[in-house]
Amino acid sequence: MKKKGVGIANMWYGIGNTGLPNPASAYVELLDDGTAIVLTGCADIGQGSDTILAQIAAEELGIDMDDVALISADTGVTPDAGKTSASRQTYISGNAVRFAAREAKGVVIDEAARLLSVDPEKITLRNKILTAEGTEKSISLLDCLNECRKQGKLTLGHGSFNPEVIALNSETGEGKPYACYGFATQVAEVEVDTETGDITVLRMVCAHDVGKAVNPSNVEGQIEGGVSNGLGYCLTEEIVVENGVIKNTDLATYLIPTSLDVPEIESIIVEDPEMTGPFMAKGVGEPALIPTPAAIANAIYDAVGVRVTELPVKKETLLFKMLKKEVS
Image 1 (cartoon, rainbow, N blue to C red):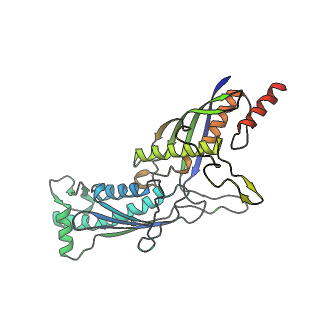
Image 2 (cartoon, rainbow, N blue to C red):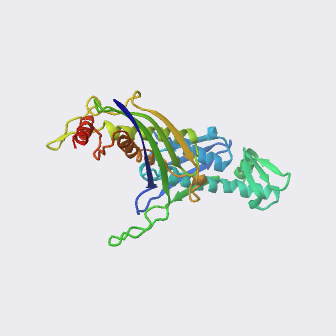
Image 3 (cartoon, one colour):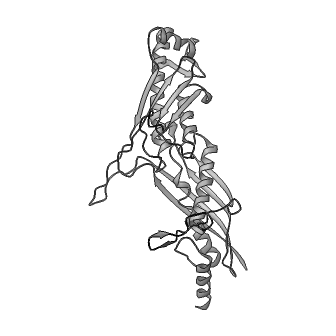
């Protein structure tokens, strides 16, 4: 007999290192042709940070994303951005890039204000046009850059960001370990075969608060990837150690989900602005997998009425618990 169940799990997750200095820095230069070079130590290991940081720079500079050349994670030329971990790079390196772009932009803003005879506060830069608000005065970014070069002005900016945290007191635990948090709720629908113990995850619905979604497709990809990882963590992935030696060192014996195992995933992006983030964004990487195993385990309990408290949930363990329940 196959029984279905639904389970829910919630999580909160601190963005960045716990109660520790957590800085990142970046350089941005606006070139004569209106394009920009971004130097950042942030390592893109598949999470899409190169795309996000290029978007942030382009938005701040009022140019197209295609006009941004990003050089990342080159220890020979890029400034330190810290580790790609703790779901921190969008929030921390994103701020560093934005501040660097803002400083570079400030040079052309000041020059445009001089040329248009207005206060710098009235100048906006969008689509490569510098406009004086409340007037019909404007100048192209290329013309303004040309004027900067005539005067030897470099349109180069440096930015850094270190979240405000307070180290945890070793005795009381008091402190402020993170500047901001991610939040999520996931719901799992499963089917359990009571004769074999086989567990099939049919559907996952995942709502994640990400601040502002700089790139919604990227966020959805993060959620889907995280759920796939959480699925393996819950049902199939187990490290077998004998006498201190890992025995299952290949994908034939360490079982990760395949495309046939991954269920339908519905991603719900919740945009609760993070005022300290770059364009109000924050991280979403690790939060995507944290609630998944708990949601699936709760759904299993809803389906067959037994609680499995060890991961991965093995079908023989589940069968034993179901049998023990029937006997008792």
